[in-house]
Amino acid sequence: MELKELTGKHILTGVGSGNIKTGDEWNPIVGSFSFKLDGIIYTAIENPSDGYRSMMEKLVVDEHDIDTRLPEIEVVGKMKDDSSWESNNVLQLIDSKNGKVILEVGTANTADYYPYFVAKWHPKNLAVNE
Image (tube, rainbow, N blue to C red; front, side, top):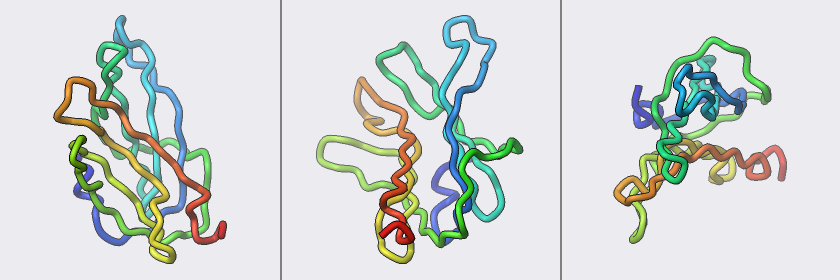
């Protein structure tokens, strides 16, 4: 599944983060970040690469329970714009009521030697918290 498939209007009802056991001897545990959109839980799984570089390895539909449940929040998904110094493959979920970014997930700095996994949750940006 590609992050860009989640652009557009959605209802966000949960977020969570954790670790996943991989069975890989070099990276036995990797980070994960989950969010629930329109009743479906998506989990972004990190590929820690060599310890200096990381990236989002894949986005999967998941069936585990989610850590933090939220009231229904209308969001708009968009891909983060590239800047003059950084290319991005990052999905941003923006609160429809106030236009603030509340969740970011993906890989930033994709065209550089040091890309990095992005899994950010900004609860202070929720309109209900203003």
